[in-house]
Image 1 (tube, rainbow over the protein chains, first blue to last red):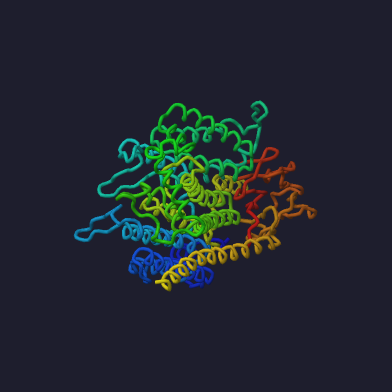
Image 2 (cartoon, one colour):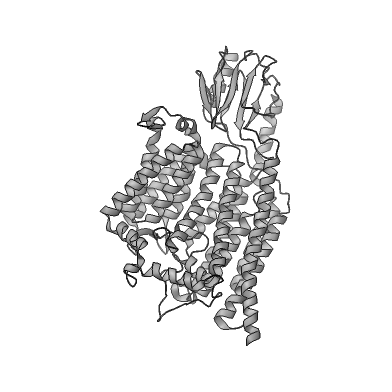
Amino acid sequence: MTGASRPAARVELPRILGAIRPRPRWTETRLLAIAALALILGSISLSAGLTGRLALYAPQGLAIYLVALGLAHLAQVLAGRRSDEVLLPVVGLLGGISLLLMQRLPQDLVTLELGETVLGLGEVQLVWLVLAIVVATTLGIVVRSDSWLRRYKYTWAAAGIALLLLTFVFGSDVAGQRLTLRLGPFSGQPSELLKVILVVFLAGYLSENRPLLIEQDTRLGPLRLPPLPYLAPMVAMWAIALGIVVVQRDLGAALLFYAVFLALVYAATGRLSLVVIGSILFFVGSAFMANLFDHVRARVDIWIDPFADPLGAGYQVVQSLHAFARGGLLGTGLGEGLPLVGGRLPIPEVHTDFPLAALGEELGLVGVIAILGLFFVLIERGLRIGASAADDFRAILATGLALVVGVQAFIIAGGNLKVLPLTGVTLPFISYGGSSLLVNAIVVGLLLALSDKGVEPPPPPTGVRRWRDRLRRRAA
Amino acid sequence: MDGLLLMVWVIRLAFLALLYIFLARVVRSLLRDLRAAAREPGASLGRLFVIESPGGDPEAGRSFDLDAITTLGRDVNNAIVVEDPFASGEHAVLTYRGRSWYVEDLGSTNGTFVNGRAVAAVAPLGFGDEVSIGQVRLRLERARPS
């Protein structure tokens, strides 16, 4: 008994600071070196395409970015974390490609005035990228316990819904979608943050109710379902997804939330029947919406035949397809795609919605496949971290975090390639945009923290303490 | 001019090649990681970790790899012998059926508890849940490559 009480006091301190014991991360070092080399070559190629000289294009920007990556690596080495060594290089390479692309696009797409200096698209993106690296690394090093996520799952859910309502009430309309929330000089897209909150809530809910969801004691025709009360959150999710489509006109977020939700239900229960029912509900809802709401029908019509109105509604998608076609197998080379046609961008919103089309033109099929491959690696890492997690909450959380980024990437990639209807979600780590980059950095940071073998063991489930006290009383 | 063009193409291809070299290195490290996990002898269905055991047998902090059917109790013929005054000879059995773990009380005197709730006959058990037999507290964990 004395042995049990003394370590409790000793454990408190080191857990906050952590015994600092540097630990080399050679895999990460090597991968980062290759990524840095690739980005330097990319920058030279970009310079050759834009100015015809073999030099680094905007060397300060690239240097700042590479130094930030190096420092992030160094911080993790010094902190001695045994976390995943592949995530940072993969994300770093994606971010670097994003930097090259934003330096290459017309700089006046986005400007930020700071006193006398005016930052262009490339510089603003650089600022966000560096911030994202800082956020991801800090979370990866500092987060040593998950109880702040695990315990307050309903609070998180409430916060998420509040965020949604706030956007709906106070949000400002941009291009027919009410997604942006302005707060003084800052503006952000809360639906980006919402996706992380959703995963946290689902991880908490599913890990707690997993056994109940596996039971099948309700029969509905040929289908066997879990007890009906436990289906309520599922129906609520469906309603929220459809609500986002109707109220916010944000098809991308709705599709993303619902797809991740179904995937997590499957991951937690292994019941295909739930996924089938969920998909049927979704398709019924979608068909209904497509007939009822013009903005949904317009998207579907464009998807089925963008060439019906190539200069109007279908313009973006048609131009995107042309860009991919122009790129061919090896691409035109960085900086040699078509920046402007007749004084305007060939693809409107190329920096947020169509970065893959721009990369497809300049890097070709080979480059696009490499980039999609990087996203696949990201998903694989998340699933792997989930598979080796200590308990259900962490397993579902890691799976969900990886899927939320991966599925988003494939929704927008599908939109650019006319495989799926085009939706306005960003391509993670590549699109321009502060909120998107920061939220995806949070995801990476949490994955790093979850993958650490030295994190705090999962807390005992609630209810145990009560039982233990009762038994002690009985024994005494 | 031609020399420059050639250089540009070389750099362009080298950039693409480096992307693939990067991917190849990543995939190699992922494969190594997956193979290590597959080689792990503890690739069992789960583990039972002893959180608290006042009697000292099983030792607190120890963990057992679980078979699809694992019996617990004070009798020496159990897979996991729980030496505790509040435990019965044949106390409980853990079974892995289909996709999930279940705990079954074998008519013990003092009952089997999951997260503090008494098990009536059979109760589903998730990873991270606590099973209590007498004063011994055990936690079901995933088989984890250590």
